[in-house]
Amino acid sequence: GESNWLTVLQNGCPGPTYRLGQALQTDQLTQIVDGFGLTLTPTLPIATGGSIFAPIEQPGLAAIGQENLAITPLQAILAWSALLKDGVLSSGKLLSATQSTGQQWQVVGTDFQAQSIQRAVAGNSADQIVTGLTRNDGFIEHSATALSGPEGDTTAWYMGAAPGGRPGFAVVV
Image (tube, rainbow, N blue to C red; front, top):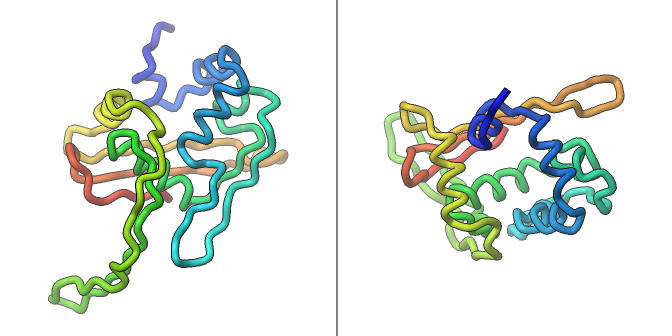
């Protein structure tokens, strides 16, 4: 039936997204993937892996995550964070903390600071997406299940953030 892009996003509808991928030129879709850093190896003071990316051959499949791009959870959290930070992709910040029972968190390793890399998407577009994914209780979340193998295996992704408005915490599982 009739739908808008917010409904498509909220419900993980692959059909309209597939058709959008087909309508985009391969270089436009590649630019979007590059803009969100999904072809970059994250730069952190620990060993990190990058994605496996070959040129897009079938834009419809690429748009729904069923083509040549395989990403890491670290790349996913950086892309998700770009949406939460007005569309600006950053290098991320590695932070470690410990907490004893009944005690405050003790932060360790704050010397590595995040650096802005590039604008992934216009700020107003990022805001519309985040607003559309914000639940009534203030949590921001999106989940998806995708085919991930020739035997019909699936992979599930969950992305969340809180509090709504100006999220201070984000998670990708």
